[in-house]
Amino acid sequence: MLVSGVERWEGYSGFLLEMIRAAGAEIGDEVVVERPDGSRFRGLLMFKGELSAENVLVLKLSNGYNIGVAVDPSCRIERVAAGRRPAFTRPPPPPQKSGLPRVKVIGTGGTIASRVDYRTGAVRPAISSEDLVSLVPELSELALIDAEVLFSLYSEDFTVREWEAIAERVKRVIEDGFDGVVLTHGTDTMHYTAAALSFTLQNPPVPIVLVGSQRSSDRPSSDAAFNLMGAVWVAARAPFGEVVVAMHAWHSDEAVAVHRGTRVVKMHTSSRDAFKSVNATPLAILSGGSLKMLDSDYHARGGDGFVYAPGFSDRAALVKFYPGMGPEVLEYLADRGFRGVVIEGTGLGHVARRWIPVIKRLTESGFFVGMASQCRFGRVNMRVYNTGRDLLNAGVVELDDMLAEVALVKLMWALRRTSSLEELARLMLTPVAREVGSRTLPQGVGGV
Image (cartoon, rainbow, N blue to C red; front, side):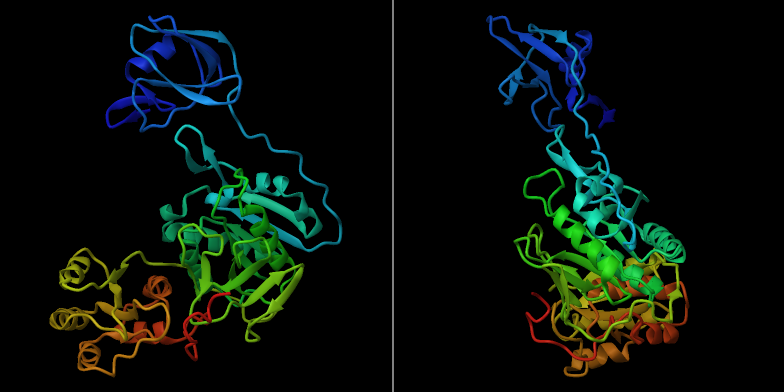
């Protein structure tokens, strides 16, 4: 593999890579390293961090510890025994019980389907949905599991194409008569995908549950198994048919919080209870094998009205305003062919007054400008101050209490349905999946 013009193999490069190849060694082989001073090291050749020094060779000693050995061309590397390359072996799947609900588990990647890469110390996609099911035998008590991998990506690599592929696959799973769907997904952009599926798969007859983990499944502190069991329980037995996110409700393995797909945000970088409902309570809490509904206004499992409305435009953007920021970013986006933007404005929905002439010119040319707030709680109200009223007169559409991320996804969805600014404004403000609330809850109510 070439990295910046330098050939690399399992983290090794340069003269050290040449010495390893000359010895005929592979990762996992037992090797001896001898240095001119007479020191001698014997162990298994291991992956090496790509950012470590070029002259360091990593060995696993017989006591289980890894060491780094400084090597120069005067040293000698000898392969003394063949080894076995570290690999994950799937255990046999647990027996399935008849008469249980049928749940489809679809893998898309993320930490929940990852393992530590000992070459770099990082986490990478490696475990399939079938592996996850085999590793969590308790799932066989909850449902008849049918698992597949749609793709294996870090969630930051998702685009509108992945949203469309997931939606189309879930639609076919619903048509096949499954009682619920679980999507394993990276946590970093899971709330974006949840919103996308909420607009695409409206009023589904079964739960569509997105689940992830903050720590990879091979770490002792992993939350993958607990979250996955909760997600399968919800998919198999919950009374609603909606798109939701199911993740730890707290740090300990006590409860899973079920969040509506258009009301949830990842609020912490690493905590198990990173996901919170904003401007809404969680839809439900699963604890001790019992589901407590916290919101009685939901689309019932098996209910009518399922609508499949696929398609997203990638010609929409999300812009966060900050003090001193100029409006040139809007002009740049319009010049690059973007058709609309959601602005995260300050407080009730404001930007600097110098933005107003640019916004007016863009909206008059057919460019959509929507306003959300940087504040997590509350709703936009641009009629309180002069700046807000002037922005409204310039053509800005206030987006009520929609989360900025959800508003972006909805704009991407709406742009595939119309090019009319008037119709875009109507679509953006018409509730599709409870993304627009009827009231605003006090700060903190959205968490558990």
